Length: 265
Ligand code: NAI
Ligand code: 15L
Image (cartoon, rainbow, N blue to C red):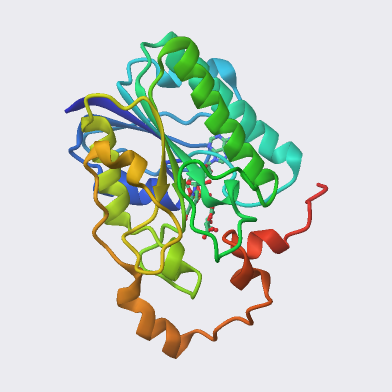
């Protein structure tokens, strides 16, 4: 069992979910964010921190033997905002990890690293990047920093290209991209259990009948997602209008993000 597991972005959607579901999986959960984290419960410590502040991140990581890095901008925004939280943030995190004994890192990357691949494509780990905005570019930067720190310093990371992590699939695209909360938790557990991790990209998706992504390169982790968005296919067909096949949301894997303009401010 881990002694102290750090979760950055712990006040966000996935951070709040993992705060609850990872209770007891480490002796202490160290929870961090720039947003309000509420009160500390038993087994938790709250450490507010702006990821763009290198000295603060250095203190944040000290004493942790595992990290789930969720903090940062999670949608398309201006380059300036993304630069501070996602580019400097991920650099600061890896520098701090290097200085403090290289705790294993689960990095929340995104399907928007490959968003311009068409929905007709089936991708494995060797698929080229096709980011659909600066948000996707920032996740590619994070994956590249992880790779650099692995080759130079032996830092281990799981680069989880999350599809759509929600309580249940909400639209037609999510029949392919959905990643259930339970499957994400099981993946984090497998990552911290694995004798060797290296620097491994994993598609963060459930066992969806209509999925686009092949995780066979990561079979050594022993992680097998159990949920399937197809269980909601009927409900979605009944309640959500099917998009026109020419719309971005139905053409590209990144969905509506491919339709976003470049944000200037
Ligand atoms: P979220 O936006 O709800 O949470 C992100 C958290 O990061 C927020 O609480 C925010 O206050 C914090 N944050 C932002 N800038 C910060 C900074 N400079 N310093 C410290 N904290 C900062 O996002 P969500 O949905 O919980 O996603 C978590 C992570 O997973 C994000 O990195 C996101 O890019 C990634 N992801 C999520 C997906 C999903 O389906 N929810 C899909 C793909 C990737
Ligand atoms: C992401 O990367 C976002 O953080 C999340 O809010 C969703 O939009 C998700 O991708 C998605 O593509 O569904």
